[in-house]
Every structure is written in C-alpha cells, then in structure tokens.
Length: 390
Image 1 (cartoon, helix red, strand yellow):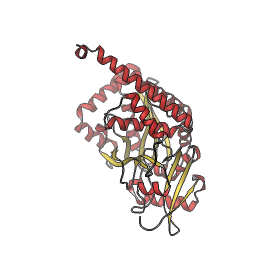
Image 2 (cartoon, rainbow, N blue to C red):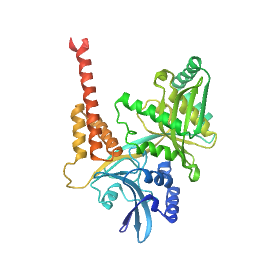
Image 3 (tube, rainbow, N blue to C red):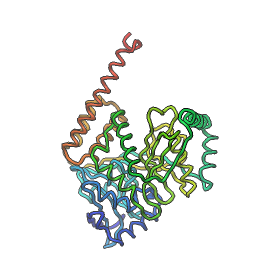
Image 4 (cartoon, rainbow, N blue to C red):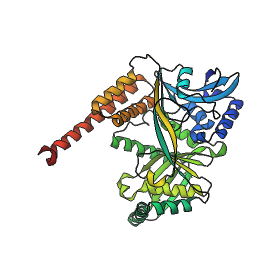
C-alpha cells in the first residue's frame, strides 16, 4: 500500500453510514474476505460487547482505505472478539491493505497477536482452514463424490445413524434455531467439555457468552447472523451446533454433542444434516475452521491460507505474557515446536478472554496445574507399564 497512511481509532458505534458503505464495497471486492467475521455487523455487535474494543480506520490522502477491528488486553492488541474470531485482518480492497507488521507499527503496538490473519504478512506460521465447497447441484452430488472417495468412512457413519435410531428412536434435525435457552444448553455442554479436556473455559469470563447471545438476535444484510442446528433422537437432544453465516458461506463455530453417545457420532451426523438442509436454501461453502479433528479430511475439499503470528515491538523486554508462557511450558515439561505452539495458543485464549491481569494470571496458573497433573499421570502410567518398568 503506497503513500503515507493516517490512522484514526474509533469505537465501532461511531462508524458512519459512509464508513459502512466503504466497508461493504471492500469485502465485495476481495473474495478472501468472504467469511462472516469480516462483515461490519460482526464488528458492530462484538464492538459493543468485547471489553476495550476499537476499530482502526486507515486513510490515505483523506480517503478511507481500510478497517481493522481489534481489542486490547494489557499490552497486547488482538483481533476483535478473540479467541472466538476465526478469521481476521484489515478490511480493504485488494492491494490496499497494510501488511501485518505495518498494522503493528501504525497502532504502535507493543505486541500484536493474531491466530488466523488474512492478508500480507512477513512473520509467523502459515496455517490452513478447511471447508466444503459444494457444486451448484448442492449436497447430493457432493455427498456422492465424498462417499465414492471415502466409502468406508461414510458407510460407517450411515451405520452409526441406524444404530442411534435403533437405540433411541427416530432422528429429527432442525436448523435456523435462535432459542436462547437452547444456546444456554449448548454453552453448558461446551463448558463441561472444557472441564473434561482440561482446556480454558472461554465462557467463564461472561462477555463471550453475551456475544453469542447478541449475534443470535442479529439480522444483517445478505443473511448475516447466527443460528443453531440441533439433532434429537427419540426426543433426546444429542447434538447442537452454533454457526455464523452470511451470503453463501456457513461457518460451523461451536459444536457440542452428548458425550455418552460418542460411539454413534452425533456431532458428525448433525453436520451432515445441517449441510443438507442449508444447501437447500442456497449455501454452498461450509467452513470448518482449522484442521485437527480427523473427520474434517473426509468432508473438506477446499482450504484457505491464514497466518498465526505475534509481532513484538523491537527491543521490548520480557513481559507478563512471555512469563505466563514459560510457566505453562515448565508445568507441562513441554518439548518440541508443536508443543510450544500449543502452549502459546492456550495462553492466547486465556489472555483474550480475561480482561484483568489478576484473571489472566488465575487462568495461567489453572492451566499450569492441569498441565502438571497430566504430566504426572503420564509419568505414573509409564512406570506402571510392564514393558517400560521391566
């Protein structure tokens, strides 16, 4: 982006109708900004809820050339609504966006942390998000092709569906649900999952749950909004998924399922049914976010490159953020680059959710205790294994 750029920091509520019109024109001009997270409605809703939220407006020669929604936690600048924002970057026309490092300089950031940056960047690690890009014919030809490519996997899921129906009764699926009570059930199941798996409870801070509730009641242009899909078997709720959508893109966001039914794959069955129902009303791209869960490779046939990075001001001394990462590393006796990245991501979620230094340290110590306990359990298991102790 040539020429000097001025930056104005403002609250999302202060964006003018002209700003919103520019914003919409920018995302329409760049297919890389197709995710619902780039819509102005997402920023307006999240900007009213996430603490210390703002929008950086980039201007050149008086003309607006970009927007960057963000939040501040201590000395760290993050994308707005982190750790829940699955795509972020500068909203700009192609070729106009400053690079990640340029954004950090423009904002005079001590530290700029991003997990899924879309746009030019020199630092960090390239990652990929996975999605289903359906043909114009919709779900039926997509499923036929997937079943032909991964026959054993999809036949197994068909058997799982029959098993679930045999055990509990007929399966019923609905999408487009916006009942706040159902969302409360989803959040409760998700918090239980975090407890069982030792992950930081991102809903304990309060504002993250408030954001999901607010988005659920939002209706924006081009079908922007959030909704849930749910699956019942014999009247029993077996799985729920909260999604964000706009245009022809459907972003799976928060999936949960009844853990006692995991052998029947209710979450995967719900995703399949949600895609089938949503494709009937015109959705063609179904975004599953980052890989990791094994089932995604069987579903997804498209991907988008993003970048994970932490840009630190040159010469900055060690901070509480780095100290917390070292604490988690020591507790888990982390070794290797992959494990170090896992620790940093765990801290990034804590740092983004918790607003006060005390709450951030509380989260870090809690995560360290879990890491220490898991390390001790693994050590005991190794000592108890005759193949090791003998």
